[in-house]
Length: 306
Image (cartoon, rainbow, N blue to C red; front, side):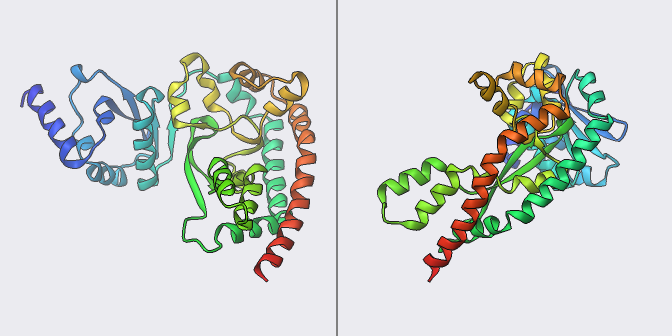
C-alpha cells in the first residue's frame, strides 16, 4: 500500500470516526513502559492506524503494559486535551514532556520539600474541617432550585508536568453581575455574587491539596492552552507544583506590581519555606473574613429558607 493511499485512508477515517486532525502529527514511541507522544511532519510520516479510531486506541492502551503517557506540549492544545481525555479513559496518568529544570527537580526532593508537602496536606484537611459550614453553605446556595451541576472541571498542569482535572464551584463573576443588574431583588443571586467576589469558587481546590496535586503555596496552575504556548526556555515552569496562594501576593505587596513569568521562574529557583510562610501570613486576613462570612452566610440561608 502506498503512502498516498494511507494518507487518503487517514483523511477518510477522520471524517468517519471523528478523530482529531492533530493526531495526524503524532509520533508514538514505546519506551520503558511509557508511551511517548511527539511531533513529526505529516508529509514525511506514515499515519498510525490506531489514531484513526479512538476506541481502537483505548483498547490498545487498556491491554498494553504502558504505565504512563508522556506528551510533547508542542502538539498544541487540541492534541493535549485528546491525550489527557484518553489517559482518563484508560486510567493511565498523562505527563507533559518538559526539558531542563534539573535543579528544580533536585530542590523538590529535599527534606524541606517533604516538610512542605506534609504541612500542605495537614493544613488543607484542617481548613476543610474549619470551613465546613462555608462548604455546606456553598452547596446549599448553588443547588437551590436548580438542576445545573454544582462543579465545573478542566485540565491543569501539575507537578513535574502531570495533568489533572481541577474542580471548582460553578460561579461565574461576570454572569452573576449581569443577573444582579437585571434582578436587583433576587437575594439568592446576590448571595452567589458575594461568593464569587470572595473567590470561593476555588474552595474545592483544597481537596487537590489533600491529594497532593496542589500546594497551599505555589505558582498559578496553567491550562493546556497556556502550556502549549510556553517557549522551551520557560518550560521548567511546567514542572512546578501549583498552589492556592501564589507569589503574586508577595510581589504585589512589596512593589505593587503583578507577578510575571520572570517572577515565577525566580520563585522556583529561590524557593524556600520562609518565602512560603511570608505568603501565608499575607493571606491570614482573608482567611479571617472567610470565617466571618461562613457564619453570616449560614445564618442568612436559615433566614432565607424560613
